[in-house]
Image (tube, rainbow over all chains, first blue to last red; front, side, top):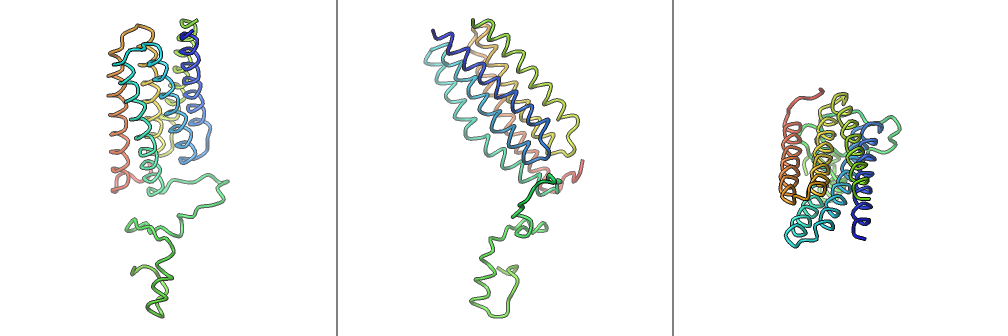
Length: 136
Length: 90
């Protein structure tokens, strides 16, 4: 009975891995590729580790598998964010169908500072005549 | 039942590894290659888990944990290298 559950978990995990790999080949630019590979790839690895825990059904193995799943759950979003940020800062070409890039006018590529848009309003309300938010 | 599933999973993971290698060789920028390397690391972790089930040796899980840790550190290191004025394009 548990063999069936282990098989289902293994096949589901491998299917998510294949989906992530197809996405990484087929998708048009870095953010979409990163989106496919990190989410589906992490879910695939977590499902396979759940299958390992279910197959051995031993407290030491289950503890290690759960620790691995928690580790993946913590590090996969961090790695995705850091790579996407670095790719954006190094000037990757976004897909032609991208309709919204809110970071473009808010971000200063020289000092890597991100403006929220509220600095300008605050500066204007306190010091009249200041129109750029660069002086914070 | 489980043997068939394990063979199918080996095949699918090999397919995923092949696709990731295609992106690793073709990727136009270095960031694409880093993404492909991270996917390769998780596919290898999947291989290790399936092999642990296949052979019945649970110690392989330690290998999987170490691979995941080094892949995470490599991604962070590559990202810092890119951001702090490494190679710009290619």
